[in-house]
Image 1 (tube, rainbow, N blue to C red):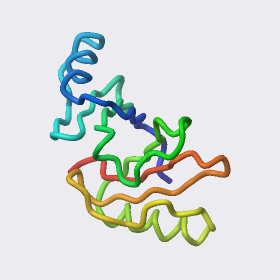
Image 2 (image 1 turned 90 degrees about the vertical axis):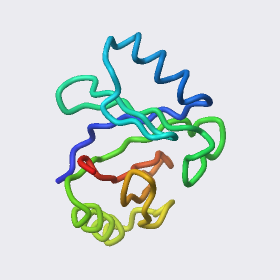
Image 3 (image 1 turned 180 degrees about the vertical axis):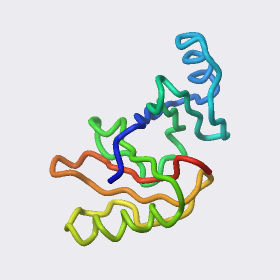
Length: 122
């Protein structure tokens, strides 16, 4: 079973946000893409910063500013979670797709919170 270990914040200026969190956390990002960077906050728990313009599917409404991501190892695990969550009847907001950080999909919880599954190790 996947465990939640990534909090993603949508940001207007990824470079400025990386600089802010670099200073705040006193560490370098562990992942750095043009539209997404992340910092390991503590062993196994990660803070991600994602450019608003690159978020797919895009945020809806004022309350949709972050998502809970479940990072798994291997593309097969992403697909397995996709099939399992579909079988459980979770609404799928983003079908299984490939983005610059690898395969991913987004499901929704009963309140409409976004639950993303993606790769832990690219």
